[in-house]
Image (cartoon, rainbow, N blue to C red; front, side, top):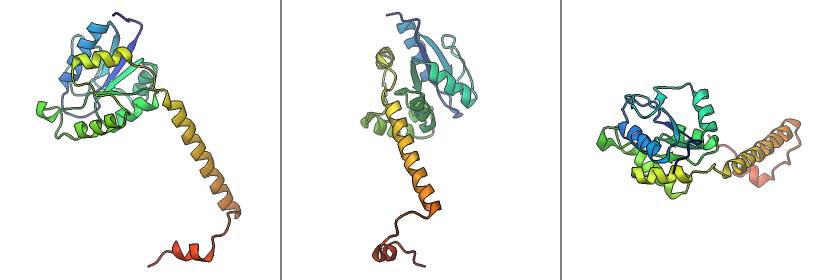
Amino acid sequence: MADDQRLVVGSVGTDHHPFPRFLDWMAAARHELGVDVFVQRGATPEHPDVPGVDYLPAGELEARMAAADAVVCHGGPGTMSLAQRCGHRPIVIARDPALGEHVDDHQQRYTAQLQSEGLIDTPHSVAELVELIRTARRHESTDEHSAEIARAAARFGELVDALLAGTLPRRRWRERMLFRRTP
């Protein structure tokens, strides 16, 4: 299935450990699906079949993710969060310390937890990566989440305004005693 109108953006983060498996999987997915890819590859040597750069300024990476049809990334919390803020359900390939991709298995443990909560997808093979890219859709809950944050921020602003104006209701004596700071 060729879909040359789709763009898949990848990021391996900024860790000093090379992550060649990531680029190998992206190359295989690119050839299988016929999609355009662009990868921020960090310390990983260039791959002849995967266009990209070593590092990108944060704003440029964000812009590329926002324009992408799918985002594939390593298991770094910052990168996954950025993908979500850009409207994606991240497709996450966790670094494997047994392959020299990281110092320990924290990415594997963290991404397994996020996968179990339904927040990310974690392929364990090229075939799974291809299928996840093929079916990737913009993450629908981003607007809902943004609206929830906006409501919370507005309520916080109302409370601060009331506090500054001195119009917050006074707490009863027992509440004041309960929440009083003790040395």
